[in-house]
Image (spheres, rainbow, N blue to C red):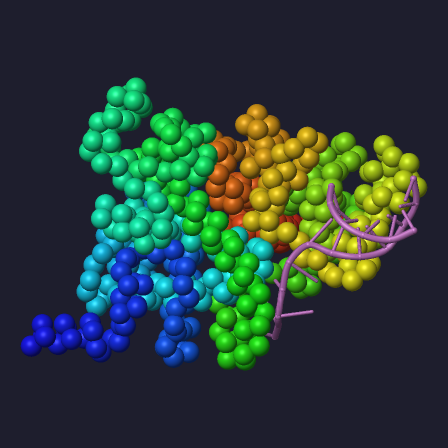
Length: 477
RNA sequence: GGCGGC
DNA sequence: GCCGCCAACATA
Ligand code: SF4
């Protein structure tokens, strides 16, 4: 009777229509069609929050130093998803593709719905869109790995990706034509060569009559490119939709809640953490408590007496965030710049922008200092540029020198560890490690997510450990 | 640095 | 050549 009941439930009780059965025929999809949402608001919120948890797990696992897309990476992510009790997701994420049980369909529908809710909520700003896209792309590639050969074929077909897997006889022709470039032990797909440019530049790809022949391992990179470009277009449409839909009060409460969970954003620079900064001691403070990205800007400002556009911005917003008064910031920039520039030229070219950054001109917006994500994405490596995150932009020897100059008593191997983290592109972990070697007394409960957070932590540490010095100077005066 | 005005 | 304006989240 169980058997009968279950069988009926597939068709009747769960209410999967024929249309939905088609829509949810595969564990992986490109989310081209919006779902019909027939669930309660409470379920809506719960399920979407679960997907956000998945995003955070992916992000944090990648940040831990585990190389993306490796076996270890997949295992770590899935284990954590299980540990947080998100079993339904594990099933659909690791599915081989074409399962037909009720649970299969249920999982895919949940995947579908939660994806669209998140797509909507994370479409709001540029920053959120970027973050959402990278998590979704990683998730997509993770899931592709578990699809069976049949599942992959079906996926390609249902998304009109005309990459056909090649036949036996075609294969034997290719073997002779390709001069050893095609390996007979692997499975190959035929792809229009216009879609494989990025792959061609990285690997040797056999091209023939307008087609590239790609292994089944490499095909994911082609698909991912398609998926990404499709998604980024969709995100733009969503951001329009968002502004209209958000007027529903009930939805507003839920959607708002969702993206506050966005990890990079939980450090907010408020008026609460503004310090009295003595501008004449800024050099000492910088060496002691500035994060590398800001210290590096500060030193080129004072050594070269010049900063390029984004460097000026990155630094000025940071300074504003730690509590430097606008007059002091203006004074600092002017006194350095005018060592190599006529004072009136400085006034014409820069003073307005500084006031504007402090919210004193035009629209009078108090712009928020850049978070690590933003700084890292600034990519400061260019000629004469010092902005961006040093762990990303510095060449190996440059980084070596920086670390030697700024870490006074390194434990053996510590510097090596920092360099390796930087090399593996784990900039924020790297920075956290750097922070810990400079401030062994401070216990961190999270990684560095914001330059101003870095400053607060190291500055307050010095304050508390040097209370005796402060008292002394008070007493002696 | 970008956009815009004269 | 002069100049202004903008980089951003509405949420407690
Ligand atoms: S990780 Fe963040 S705080 Fe550290 S140097 Fe890079 S941008 Fe600055």
